Every structure is written in C-alpha cells, then in structure tokens.
Length: 385
Image (cartoon, rainbow, N blue to C red):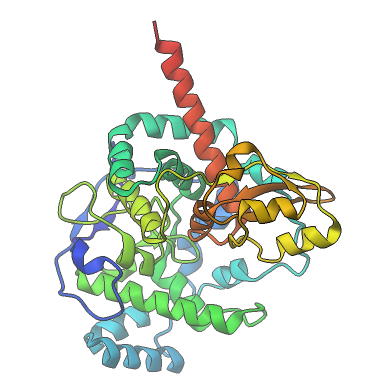
C-alpha cells in the first residue's frame, strides 16, 4: 500500500481517552515523506473537500495582524501553558479562506430533503465495490475491532465509505486555515453563528494542543473544509478523545493506518453507548391518525417510546420489533414531494447519529454497510463447493 504524506502522531491512549483541554505530556511525532496514498478527488468531490486549494491560499490574507486572533492566542497561551511564540507563529501563518465561509453558509433556497436522492449518492455500485475490497483487505482488523468494542464490522465499513470512500477523499484544505477561518470569520448569516463559531474556536484549540503535544507542524496537515481529518474524518476534539493506536505501533495515524481508523471508529461508538448485539432499525407500517403521528414524531430521532406504546399510537410493528427491550423512535425520511419513508430507530440508531446528527446520514451508513456485507456473503457463497 502506498503511503500518503502526513505527520504520524505518537499518542498515549490512556491519556487520550475522554481527554479534556488540559495539556498532556508532549511526545514525538515523525514526518513521513513518500508517495500519495489516494488518487485525486473527482470534480464533484472537490467542492466538498477542497482540491485545488493551494492556488487560492497563495493570496489569502493571514491572521498575523488580526487583533481578535492575537487576543484569543494570548488567552490560549495562558489557559494551556503553551509557548507564546509557537502559538503566535501558527496563527500568523493561518489564512482566511472565503471559500470555507461560503461552504458553511446555508443556502437561501435550501433543497427539500429527499431520502431517495440522498441514498443514491452512497448506496451505489462503485461505493459498494470499494467497500467490499476494503473489507476483504482489512477483514482481520475489522473482526478484531468488532470483538474488542462490540461494534459490527458493517457499521465501521459504512462510516468509512460514507465519510471518505475508504480514504479516497480525505480533503485538501489546510486544517489550520479552515479552523481559523471558522473560529474568527464564521459567517454571521448562519442561523446559529455564535454557537458554531464557539465550537470552531474549541476545535482550533484542540488542534493546536494536539499538534504541539506531538511536535507536529500544524501548517502541514490537511482535511475537510470543516477541519475533519483522516479516513474517519475526526474533528480534533474527537481525535484527542476517541482515536486509538489499534495497530500497536506506538502512534495514532488516521491518515495512513487503516487499523487505527477502524479501531478509532469502533471506540467512538462504544463511547456513545453502542448496545452490543442490538439492531439499528426495524421496518414499520403507519396506521396512525394525524394527531398520533404528530405525537410519535415530536421527539425526532431520540428513542422515547417502547414497542407497546407505539402500537397503541397506530403503528404496525414487525414481530422482532415488538420484542425489542429498549426505547424506539419513529424516523421520518422525506422524499421531496413524494410520500415520506419511515423506519423505527433503536438506541443504536441514535448512536450512529452521534457521528453526524442526521437521520439521513445514519441510514446511509447503515444501508451501505448492509449492502457491502451482502456482497461479501455472496462471494463466500459463490466460492463454496
């Protein structure tokens, strides 16, 4: 396997688990220079992950003379006991990227949600074939992660397929630039601008802590326009809290170590209380009055009802759902002007939405993983005597 240029981080798993913003002991990172692992993104994917950013950043203004960035950096130095010159140098080299601000600004004419259209982007032959090849190549690590963390291999495969097409699209924005832009120039037209800007300031802090503690150059790491990194697209806070050294080489590398990416995704789900052996969804038929349906949909994706209360509100549940011991949610997936689709979401479905707070995303992950698993079983059947 070819190796993508990146800084390999040496992390202590014990210190990283649920790490707060307090400093940990610095450890050494190693710079690797070798051939790229991934091919260039397709044109359609460039707008999301930022291929071709280099030319734009050549003229983008830096934060060197921005008083708000300077003040934030001074507070960070005092709060985290970081070297002032190092923090100032990093922020001085961070560039404001107007394209990043544009990408996080909601459209003035948002497209109506359409599950069937969304599903077609991810549950399609190319991605399923890539997922099958990935599973075949990394079957041992996937099986070990399932055994260690209790998270099915198909869920891990679904996440990595939806996020980056198994590492083919990890992003080409400098993470330092993306996070600085969203921390100091978040578009105020966004309906939750203050909340989101505060979030990205925290992520910038996590990123600078992470790179300083591991002696890595914050200018050299690339990811999505939102600052997500590696095969699983972890934000810096998630990297520090949930990423694990699953290949046992003494460092965590979510760009080049597929084992680390697999183990880290599984550890993330376990941290959010994945229930071993429980399903994610059940089918359902709707026979509810408008008032009953409104009540069922009010909690959104949060599992609230037991099977019996759902039946009393007009839902027709399959036998396996009536035996489910936990709470359930009625998940509505809109299809534009067509009738919506419905499924029952379990507590594990809710866990999948903690990776990305969207029922559409969670369903894509689940169905992609299932589709790849079916293809894998079919190959075993075809090979059987």
